[in-house]
Image 1 (tube, rainbow, N blue to C red):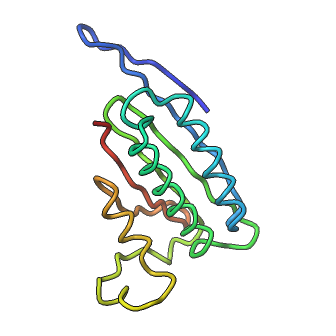
Image 2 (cartoon, helix red, strand yellow; image 1 turned 120 degrees about the horizontal axis):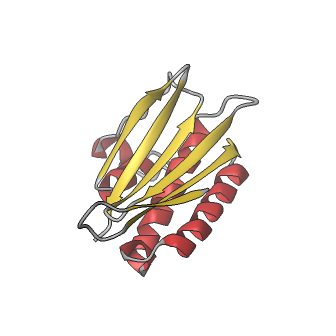
Amino acid sequence: MNQETVTAPGEPTVGTGHFRTMFPTTARGAHTARHAAEAWLATVAVTSVDDDDGMATASLLIAELTANAALHGRVQGRNARLALTLTAETLRIEVTDARGERLPATPSDAETEGDGESGRGLLLVASLADAWGCESYPPGGKTVWAQCARR
């Protein structure tokens, strides 16, 4: 966990905070990583992320992305990584797992109708985040990310 400050000439000081943790791709591992990230955010966030709505949104995004890695990104003996980057403008949440061949796709509303207990997570991510996506993580993993503007 690093915290660095960058100052541009004539500009106010902008702090950038970084949080990273590895977690086993299990429900318990995802839960532990989420709580560690929430604790870190509570200590470093000084604007919108630390209000109730901003923290709730961040917590939901972290929970969904880590749970998806535990459910869909599990490879025996391999951990996942949760990384947060907090700048004056944004919070970026990244979860990297070892299952690069299993890329996420946003399910359509038709696929999520009914009483099923799963299949709505990425719809939640898409509705809460200002942007989200997935990138390859060589040699065989992927990083799913979500970004929220700090208002």
